[in-house]
Amino acid sequence: MKPNIKDLSREDLAAWLVLLREPAYRAAQIQQWLFQKGVASFSEMTNLSADMRRELEQAFSVGRLSTLARSISSDGTVKFLFGLSDGLGIESVLIPEARRLTLCISTQVGCGLGCAFCATARMGLKRNLSAGEILDQILEAKRSLSPAERITHLVLMGMGEPLANYAQTLKALAIMTDAKAGIGISPRRITLSTVGLVPQMKRLMEETQVNLAVSLHATTDELRSKLMPVNRKYPLAELIECCRSLPVPKRKRITFEYVLLRGLNHAAADARRLAQLLTGVRCKINLIPFNPHPGSPFHRPTPAEVEAFRRQLSAYGFQVNVRAPRGDDIQAACGQLNSEFNVQSSRFDVEHRTLNLEPGG
Image (cartoon, rainbow, N blue to C red):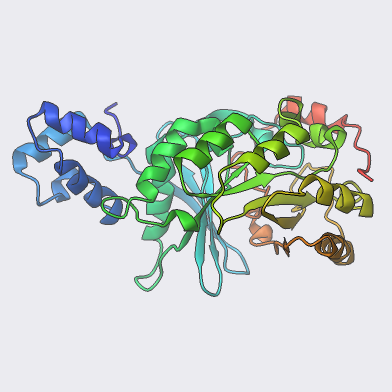
């Protein structure tokens, strides 16, 4: 199978063109056709010579995802199930709001980090996505829009851990933010969410200008390690110290995401510990009431419990937002993505049925 040309960075493509004794600026022309005009074949690249198009055709393919399903929520959220060339599937979610249209994209097929409350974890990790497969989610979602609509924001919060697929994610981010030849979305409008891979977080903030969101979900190492096995490698003290030291520009803040699990992590003591943990970190807190999915032992707190926890955190001086569930009726909300719900994972089920989950307070 020929390599997908969308997997190449501008520099990679320019180097290949130089071998053909073609000027390096052709790389930008080719990427404009791919990422701005969305062509599906080299024959459509009409400002290139016929010889150049033949060379491209012989060396590369123009990859494209297939749309296997498109589900529309009662709140207008759209979930796409995209098919990959090897038969695997990924999900992406388009979220309309009053002044923005946000696309939530995936960076891996499944996820290997085993967070107990997340449906994607039930799949395990199948493989990393290539840069082209990450970018094609944006291009395919754009094809579904009317001429008057455009994607304004991107969140790397779909299936997988973006920083566990660092090289391909960074290559995709470079094209997402390239106004000259790429998709041209400002890094201020792109947010990457991580469970807290400390070394990669440091690199990300040094090498990009995107916004960072960190999944926290507990205020003690004991509970967080049960909910998020990654905490055994990067415990809370190390994670928060990393966040304190990151070179975050003055006008930006780190977002801490906190899934509320009824009876486990939203007591007054949790609010106090969370405030203590985040002292000295320029941040805001997004509370996410748990979104149920088949087979999960967790439950969403009541609206009154959510509001009580929000008020307690606000009293410590933090900006606190409650993320309203979007698309939960089509299993498109945070923590619900799973393109293989019918594939049983007995190993996961056994491990998580036996978790000794005690309240955090």
